[in-house]
Length: 348
Image (cartoon, rainbow, N blue to C red; front, side, top):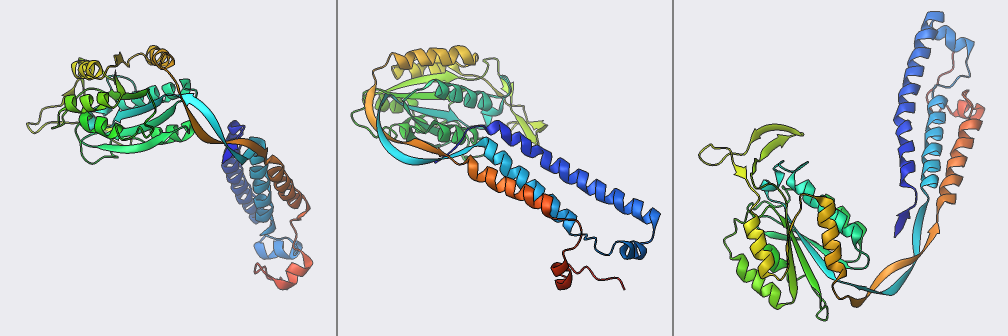
């Protein structure tokens, strides 16, 4: 397990391409200036020991030194001790709608990005709860099983998009049925499912039956509505630019609307509540209060308890490369000159 203390120092690496560009411009300027001063053959006679390769080698040493020093400032740490700790929490599963209707931009930047932000903010408020993630459209797909690794959860969350499932539609019933398989602890008394969607259910199955099955297994279902009831078209983009709007078989522009009625009905049947996700802060705060009121179940989880600093290795290697940059001269080394490794011919 690797942990990075000061990720902000990675921005220092942005100077590397700048240095390379400046070096290339400097070399170009030198060549042009030297041509004005004398011919190439004459310059080689005047400075026979000058190496064309050494300047590039010195630059490489400098850039490697800068890279390793930056990594040292970031201070990577490696987990050295894995411990089993006791934690108390609730099992929470997020089912995120990734159908094409979630690309509608009636809520900024669009419904899907808003959904991902809501889930991410909810995760930030959790302390020791276990979480899982499901993606669904025309079918449901397990994105992340129940875990206490919030970092992994956010990584999987950010990778979700409307192209990850080929089957389109919004099969809420399939998402609920899949969620029932996530709760692997039979003794867990509090199981919560959050469905984040615009409520456009185009599934052939009956969501009501799926909800009843989930309730029988002790799962409370909360629904979070994302979008506006007045609706919006679905943009079709290429490279971030809107090319057209999605149309139906009759050539009419499709308007997708937030269907709160469906989400309210699911929440009521699922012993949960419907939450409007328009205001992220208010929605997250309300969900936090709901989870705090629930009884916590004690469970065991493995986590790294000790991390050792590794910055000294990177600083040492970085300083070594900088020293090489200082001590390597621009002129050709005598024994390398004899070997002629870089095909730098002598001028007679």
